[in-house]
Length: 193
Image 1 (cartoon, rainbow, N blue to C red):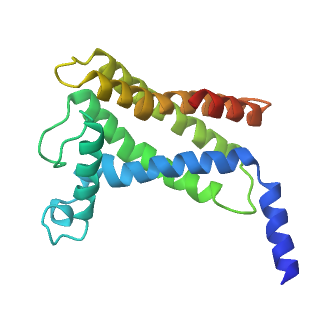
Image 2: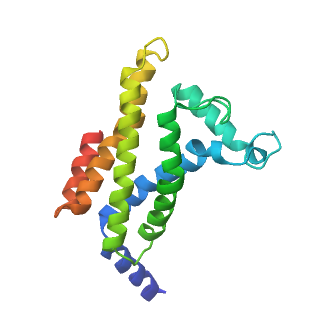
């Protein structure tokens, strides 16, 4: 028993802290994709009816909208079509970012495997795509009329929901290539606070 415990501790200590931080960040984004962003792509029969197996996703979506007034979401995933630029980013999220996020969570969650150059390349691609999508959302929010969204909700969404992903992804993609990744992560955490 002690031998297994020692082996587990050794495996956990040999894994970079950076990998655990990225696992947490990418896992949160993966959950956001599954529970909020990509619901419109699911077959309606899975979420539309009150007895549908994924109807709880509609409740989560409504709570999120009620709390944030996020203009990029509607109460019903199929109710109003998104603007073309956002629809394009949602397709990129579905076809590229979702598979990358699943792969990265799988690889980064391993207790004994360190990252490989291929995992790091996948992370850089993921970070760049997330950065681009988040910048587009920030630009749209910044230019949005206060008639559509109150100043308080606008700043909350801008600084609390979308801008952190711009900062995290920009720093994360550069720290994968940086010789001092833990310092970049520390700066990232401090700048997010």
